[in-house]
Length: 330
Ligand code: HEC
Ligand code: HEC
Image (cartoon, rainbow, N blue to C red; front, top):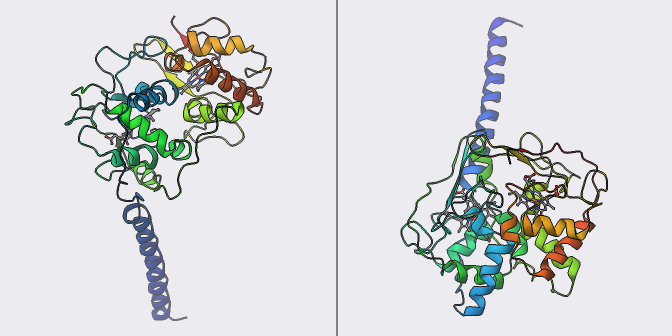
């Protein structure tokens, strides 16, 4: 081959690679920045205003989904993370969670400037189940919208909104979540519009189905599933524990225990009473005070719901996984 031909070939190969790279970049931009976040206009919905609806919503938002635990200023140094007086629904700054991610849960009180006062019911419902904020911004999936889209029916979401409307306005802007590249790109693809109605809640008389629904809606999986160093869930290790949560003021750290039904490394050998004590009094089987675990919210579940939750935990497939102990200065 003469040098002129080699040169032409070289130019063609480089041009070919260049075109492929341009195509790939265009595809990535289109997927993550043009087509994402996937959203639809906020639906038209109207929350009820009856005392019964508000009470049902309060129950779900406080004792089951524990929305208020993530969306209020809480005292993390006290077991059960109680809400700071006057800060119900005011939003919460979770701080840097590692990598380029700083999470702030918005103000969900009825304040019209900093809270949900200026949102329509449909905009709130879309944020909770579809992960899209009022302004079209995608929400970081620590907000469990992926769960809620599958567990909260229209009736339940409207009851929750009915309650949110009654939270006293608290003027507080916790700021926006900031997520650096490339995480920001991937989380743009997380929201999905709701195309089919959420399945109706399981009938309260089906104890096991209700318990499984409570495990999901109560976010137990989000803290108790085993995850890898990228915080991705590990297949086959649901509820097997290991996630580490640092506590403020050098108080140490809590590690989510294995709560599968494994007898040796999970809670298979616990009595119902042992599990109830964790949910009601925030005490581990060994008597230690439980930090991070939002038991002070679950505490208010009805006895029937706690029994259903315990029945579902007993059914969680056993996973042998030894988890290190929490280390908290009590
Ligand atoms: C595990 C913690 C957690 C739980 C539980 C939780 N949220 Fe959130 N929520 C967040 C975070 C964090 C954000 C902000 C995400 C972002 O800005 O990217 C958020 C965002 C929102 C938003 C959008 C706020 C805005 O300004 O865009 C609404 C509305 C909301 N949550 C309502 C709820 C309701 C109602 C529930 C209960 C059914 C709930 N959340 C449960 C953490 C949580
Ligand atoms: C925000 C994260 C978080 C959520 C949500 C959460 N837990 Fe926990 N849980 C923890 C941590 C962390 C501990 C250990 C605390 C410690 O050691 O101080 C714990 C402890 C427990 C224990 C005590 C086990 C023992 O060692 O005696 C039980 C039982 C439990 N959780 C069940 C649940 C159930 C059921 C749910 C859902 C309804 C749930 N948790 C939701 C973080 C969480």
